Length: 189
Image (cartoon, rainbow, N blue to C red; front, side, top):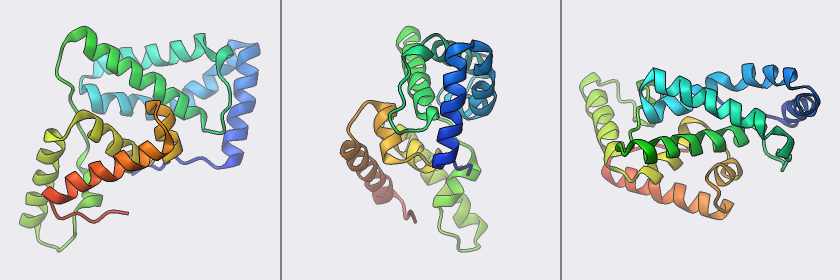
């Protein structure tokens, strides 16, 4: 699992690049290069089609660049703003296409939730239970779980990305986790 937590120094460094990019858009390339893979993977897990993901990722960064002058540091990593734009782009894609929302996740991210008992058959069974349960959960529950546990976002980040209060982000995360836990035996932080 790739941690996306940033310390104050990282946030301050990003802020310097944002200020520079507001003056000269060419400086935005640093932020693009830094966050492209994170945003691409975030969108890909929701779309599961590389070409559409590439388009939505490009649209995300284009909108970020176009609206950079409006960006205000609210004590959150710049990436939270990018995730919020990306989530909105994914939602717009699904509204326009009238397709059912999907969620795909790499096995290596899910395995952190499976109790290890060195039994390959039990591992595979538990893996399938988690995958099947995630497919049956409400889309909002899956998004909350993904942001918290697979993207390792803070509750403050999640609240900003989803445009909800931090207390709601916590409550919704724990409720979604309980729904998942009640269906399968999970370990979690």
